[in-house]
Image 1 (cartoon, helix red, strand yellow):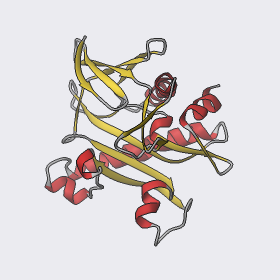
Image 2 (cartoon, rainbow, N blue to C red):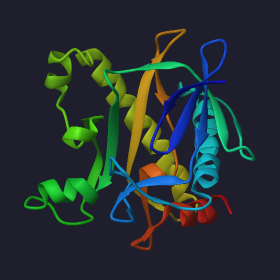
Image 3 (tube, rainbow, N blue to C red):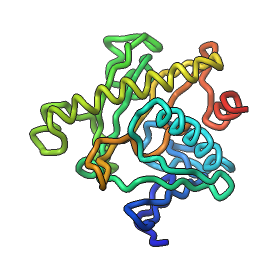
Length: 227
């Protein structure tokens, strides 16, 4: 295998036929030793976090594929903590799409003068650009188009896909009395077909989930949801 990229939470290896292997790590994002799915730095290492994240990711990607949603998922091997996916081109240097159902995290920090903690947000979609140096700033539809990162038509596809995908994930979590507050997704273009597809992972590491008003940590979430 050819190592293509060493990421914060995964290492990426090139395979044949435009496929890629993602090797999950036990590193999670956060600051000062506290987990934060919206952080752009590795905050701590949690034993078993990689395997836990892959179990959740496998479950949700298989659910989405069965629902006819286009994703990069091909297969997963829980024991070696790796996932084979289709190769995809990211937009620019990478975009993150956040779907928010309640006001928490960075949304509350930015707009706390206009909303209350936990206030319903009705699947509000935000886009940020992946840029550690500049703190992953949010970016508008007009700016995305102006900078050539995403056309207005592609933005609408991204937004509609996000709402569909997150709605399915929210419904699935609700079957275990778990409430999705927000989730961060990534998209790219399939290297073979050019279609916009969901990429990266879907795990406790990129979502905030609560039960009875209490925040559930990523490892606890996997145990409650899949246990």
